[in-house]
Length: 399
Ligand code: PMP
Ligand code: GLU
Image (tube, rainbow, N blue to C red; front, top):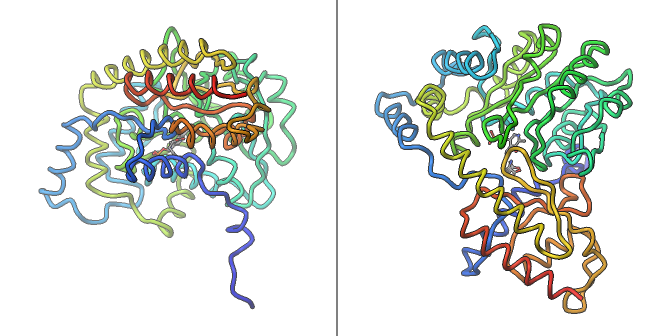
């Protein structure tokens, strides 16, 4: 047998969001003044009481393995959180804590997909879903939805994507990359389809606390017992509490699915970091005022960046209702040139923007959205203002 990588490994693309963020950070480290709209990561400091909880855990000797599904204390706090925020009742045995929501998602795909099983994913979608589905041998099936529909597919489009091989549906509301929040009626339509055709819903609710205007988060699992029995709710502390580096995510769902996810985790990674679990427990149980403070700041930034983009000739965007991303439509500018070089597609646009204007964005092709670039507005107002000025100057210089 010759040396070499597996077919599966060769087929996997690296995370574009992390790669572009790493490039922007490397340029900054080399002394370049780069504005980073690439990383989907809150810029706020992790609240002090959460940091204290981690230090206290270390000092109390909580430095050993915890039970694979997470500490009992953290899982109890998660059970309470589901009750308090989502109207969902779970037994502690139906909850699994993992190394970030990303790991929870991977565990879920692993637990559900056999070779050739289909997972329906609305697009534009977050970079990691299709790759994770492929990593476990599943087949991503895409349902595109455009700006006109506010990036939410119609009930008819959802129904049309279902086949006898449909195993699961990947729901993300609020969404990364487009910030859409699914209306309750569409959630209900999806729930009805899942019950009728017997497929699972993996509901990634990591942006649930970042919703703006009159919109409110509804967990699809709360729409009735039948849909709850088919839903794996995934959430985490990264975005709500500015805790991306702690790597704590969690999932709740049907016992057999959670058990299978836990078994996989027990073999691959064991329990997540014990002191980080203590910090996550503090986050979920402390007074939640700081969450609202951060949410309000994100809402102001959203308003500023949306207004700024829409006043630059050739660019536009729809106003997102949640998360901290906006999809900037660059399609009217494609085909122009910069310094003689053609800007043929959104990837070329993002590359030219980074090299000429020192502004990092993620090209839409990473999210199956040609013609767009994703901007994360989890940055200061000052950065937003400066970044928009640079983008405008860049656009003006296109010929
Ligand atoms: N889901 C979505 C939609 C995300 O944007 C992210 C951000 N990386 C995650 C899941 C995973 O978050 P984490 O692993 O940091 O909990
Ligand atoms: N979710 C964030 C993003 O989309 C963080 C990077 C990642 O995990 O891919 O930018």
